[in-house]
Length: 170
Image (cartoon, rainbow, N blue to C red; front, side, top):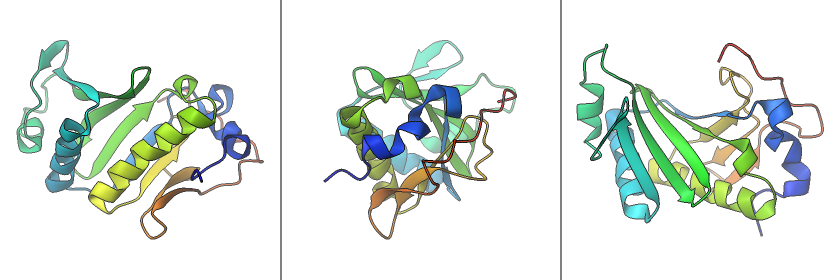
């Protein structure tokens, strides 16, 4: 049985309600957690691409990414759990793994199941929650996420209530 049913959560995947790029985070992380994610993605069989600015490079160790000068070009890791579903990890801070997904790519039960599998892989690998909030939501009111204790993706908000509007400042 799937973690979440599309008919129950479709509001959380409506780009008009959530913004098209909701924020997904793993709070309270370390360099070790970042490296575990890089290792998991490398071993997953998924297509991925690391870049700094517009320059595509081999995936470095997490320590090397965060040791770059503060004014260095933005580092990001693009990961495709399926051919047409993209997650973009940005290396903003050691203390929080941050990535975006495009809600227009997560429509219907099959796509939702892939997304839940992706969150579950990250959460299990780190033993930490993985939380999704609306675009620009500042992680104050996540709507769903991987729960370590139940080992599944669960609702953290009521999907029958309108999801928070996106913050245009994000």
